[in-house]
Length: 550
Ligand code: AMP
Image 1: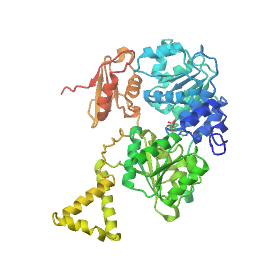
Image 2: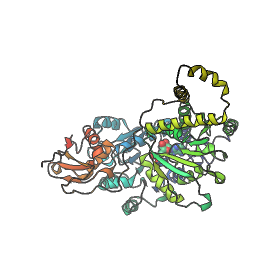
Image 3: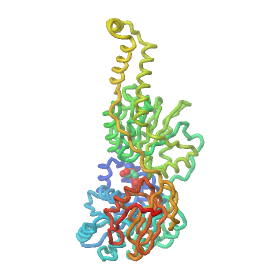
Image 4: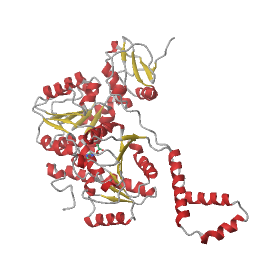
């Protein structure tokens, strides 16, 4: 079908993926491969090693997961895992294994996340039953190897995901030990957001003649540079839809396009916006040309004010009157960003590009800034107070407009009949209230929490002195050197269990019997709670704030 980009050469089919995978991708609403997928999938399917510089948000997970699935062979029930994916944190282990599960649904792939803190019993059971793909943090994977509950002799592909982050967390030795347990002729894939020399050295020692991929390096020609106000908001995934609604309320665009990654997302966002009173329409590659033309007609005619679209569907779309481009998430490549926001600010008119990003995607924003040489201003989400003020402002503008342009004489009878009994000012106030409420008024709103602070650009430091630092809390762990505790065990457990990034963990001090770890004060309680579920070196430590004796 000509209209289906998936089936075209530009789509996933052009990358040589098997039908079961193509069907899963269609079901997920993926319309075309991201740049990193386009470059990485063919060599990986062919069995080559690969080093990819790619941050979160580029689609790197599918870039390695699809080839891993493509290379799974049938009838391997009795064999050990065919692929091992090493990731720095529990959060990522869960995310990646869910992705593998979704992509591999039609292949009945058996995937198991393995991380510290999770009861080991369940992992043992699953491992005994047989697993095709293991996604784990290095510490726990090594635990299983040492207990001989995980055999890596049948592994054909090893993926080191977010390798720089794993090294920052002190997992270098663990990774070496794990790689030594896998067959020498395996395929090895390394993805990393940054390429410090230590990563290069791992690649040189453990990868064979790898294909190298780097994203977003070429600068944009000056005449392609958009002339628009560019801003971004940091929002956790769970609050993204609410944040979008609020931003739209405050910006009040007359015609805007909201870009989403997948068809699923397009449908979900369109529904949410219509529920909020917007006239929004979906535009995606699953629609026929006819349907798309009709949607465009309604936008041009002003019946629709918001288009919610995928990149594929919006290609070639030319709308004069667009004032805002909104990225519901950071696009998978900086070039796509430039392309998207080139749709506003045409012919010297003012435009505005707004991007919603998760804290993890901050690196992508930086890459975009490097590519364009333009700044993206980080803005604070409108608060409930901002929103109320803005709505009153809109009500006021509507009244002013009516006062200036409407013929109001026919309403005079109402006014006259009321002013006998009420003050004219009070009559006006009541009218304003009714207008305000009819326009949506102060719909119940809750504050959207701002996500945890951006990670510090610094690796954990070794033991520091005893002085307090502002905003930092020292936690006491009743486990120490005698139990074989190493700094990387603490970093792994804390980052893996609490979701705190390795960079947010400060100085670590280990004595024979206990350890002290610096964490941001704002995260201290969360870390303590998370540690209650966790084991470190096979023990369940007591963790509390350090008691200072003064
Ligand atoms: P990642 O960079 O792997 O963390 O992926 C970022 C997000 O993009 C995930 O939510 C994926 O589901 C989504 N994604 C990955 N590849 C595609 C694609 N080709 N089309 C649409 N969405 C994608």
